Length: 218
Image (tube, rainbow, N blue to C red; front, side, top):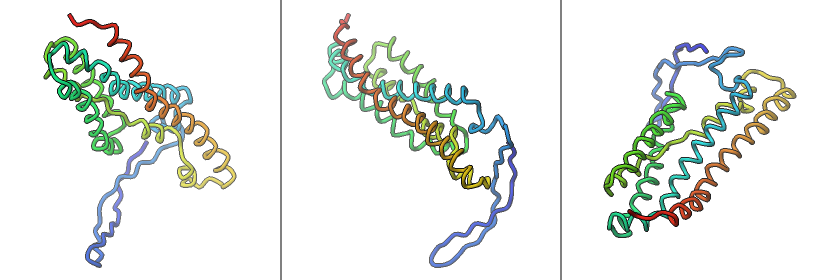
C-alpha cells in the first residue's frame, strides 16, 4: 500500500458564489497481492474474519435481550421497582446509539478501533457488575455496549463492481469476475452477518428465561 499526497481543487457553493480553494488529499493505492488490501486476502482469512465479525455481532445483540427475563430477579435481589430494574436494558440499548457516532471514524482510523475499545470495556464492566453487589454499578455497567462495524468489514473484504470498473476492467470480465464474486461471496457474508445480528435477541430470550427460572436469590 502506498499513500501519496496530492493537491486537490475544492469548489464550495455558498450564496450563489463559488469559493475555490486548494487542499491536500491523501490517495491510497494498493499494489497487486498487497497484504494491506483486504480484497486480496486469501479466502480462508476472509472467512475467518467474517466469522469473527458475526460472532461479535451475535454477542452484542444477545446482551440486549438476555437482560429482560432477569428483571424480576433484580427487583427481588436489590429491592427496587420495575422502573429501576428496566433501566439496565435502557442503558444497554442506549449504548447502541453511540455506534453511528463512532463508526464513521473507522473510515480513517480503521475497523479495529470499535472492537478494541468497546469489547474490552464490555468485558470489564460485565466483571464488575457480576461481583459488585450494587444496583447502581449494575445499571452503569449495562451501558457498556459492544460496538460493531460488521457491514463496513464485509464491504472492505469483497470488492464491488465499481472497484473493478475503476481499474479499467473489460465489460465481460467485470460482469464475470467482480460482479459474480461480490454477489456470491459478499451476499453470503452479508446474509450470515444479518442472521447473527437479528437472531441474537431471539436466542437471548430463550436462554434468559431458562437462566432466570433456575436462579435463586441468596
